[in-house]
Amino acid sequence: MTFFLNLDKRLPLEEAVSRVHDGDVVALGGGLSARLPMALVRELIRQRRRELHLVGSAHGIDVDLLVAAGAVAVCEESYVGFEQDLGLAPAYRRAAQAGELHIAESCCVTMLTQLRAAEAGVPFLPVRGVKGSDIRRLHPEYGEVTCPFTGEVLVAVPALSPDVALIHASLGDRHGNLHFDKPYVLDERFASAAKVVIATVERIVSTEEVAAEGITVPAHLVASISEVPFGAHPSSCYPEYAYDRTHLAEYVDAAATADGANAYLERYVLGTPDEQSYRKLVSEPLERLRSWHESTAAWKELFA
Image (cartoon, rainbow, N blue to C red; front, top):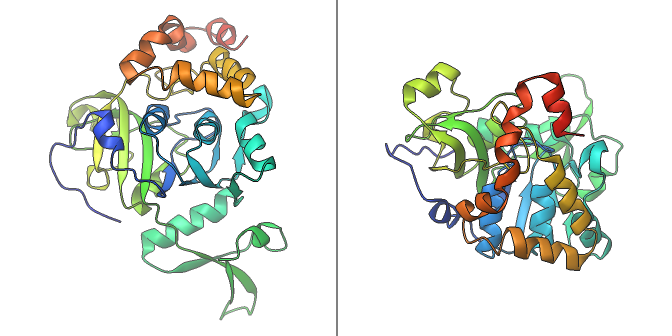
């Protein structure tokens, strides 16, 4: 855990992402199709990062897009896909089948335990849940420890301190205090365990406004903060906006082939020099996504 005590941590997105280096262990905040740090992911691709080691809970387009861009060497996740809605992650699956990606499948509780070990400053903690599973085979770094009280043999998992954690939040202040709604997934633990936390927020507001909503991640853990409206698109950032099912379906269809994935990257990422350009390109549905809370009919229409 590193403390960042400078009073004004506001940075342009491009400068913030420059703190991520090739080969870094990168923790991705959010999960599935919710509050993914997509603006940060797109900027990583624009800056041509390579050999990243991704860690996270269960993710979707963020991981798949980075894999499609050739940015990933190792993926340590419990799941990568588009849930029951849109199915498997096509670029991730293609890279895995071709042997182009080292997959170290983990599980959420095990990774949580590793992060807690880092927070506590201990080299490992015991877990029980992966005993007897092939997850042990995928992680030769795991060990065993005998409980001094019961004699039970448990799996010992090493502390995990990512080089950088990427988090998107609803609100933040210039000091780096962040507020976002549940589910927090692993974001709180990533923020405490990572060496560097890079945050994007929908809006930078006063400290009083963030405190009134509730500070989820305190400022001393955050290295930089960038204001990026719709920074989670096409995933959701509730209560701000719902996920863009139409755009996600477009991506999944495109990424079914390597050429299609490259065409998507050229249009939506490499072809947009910054997030302002990206928002302009996808502007038509953005405000409509804010309407999810107006009525049951409104949110059902978004996902039809």
